Length: 171
Image (cartoon, rainbow, N blue to C red; front, side, top):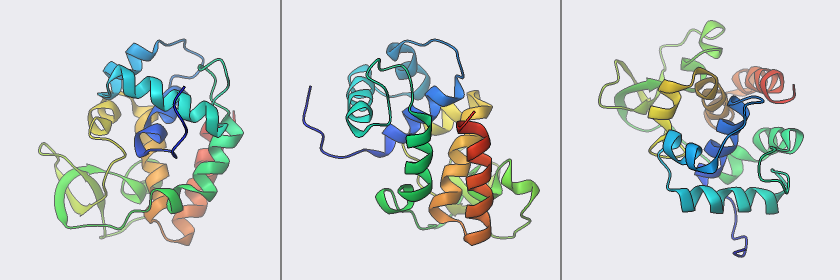
């Protein structure tokens, strides 16, 4: 096993994808295909997550409480993000479900997508395969949007994102 040199952004994507699968069993090669991440990178990511205590030694079970704590207390520091230029894309953070039901704002945030129909400030995704994966998995999409709210949201948005993530992760 390689030395742990810190988490990478796509590690968050992989962990959230596993959470979105619920109790469904999975193969790492399936995660690779669904997320657009090479098999070797998925394997290395899982190994990093085991070392970080975010995944059990069985390499199948996400340590939900640890992941939740990491998202709430560390995500904005480890993978900071500032809204960028105006682009068309797929809504995220408070601009996407479930937070868009609570927050009506002219200030929209999106992941850049050539086929996007919503215009807003760009938020960089954790990985280039994230948009395709989010379009195919509504649960993953919500988890990612809530995670972005933790990275770029205001206090109220972050608090509601914490509550929503608690419901989805600590089940």
